[in-house]
Length: 101
Image: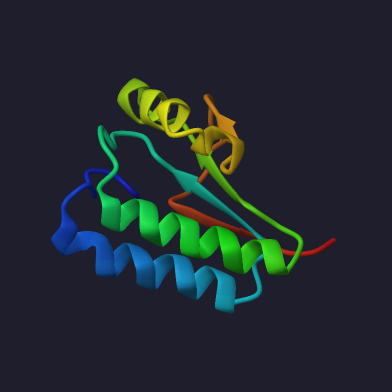
């Protein structure tokens, strides 16, 4: 699960997993944010890069179960307009692929 990944040394793994989902055909990537208390600049960069790749395919990146500090950051930076937020997951996995219907 994407938990406790605010450390910059773990960002390459996050980038890899997000890129793998998109290259695997996902238009929309759902990221389970439970337990993530802050977003480093590296994490934000990985999410924004994935967002751009998904937008080209008509999709987006959705953040699920964000902790309060993350939600506050997204509102302060106006990134809540970029990333749809869901406060309750529907058994979302770390990075779940949603393919075109």
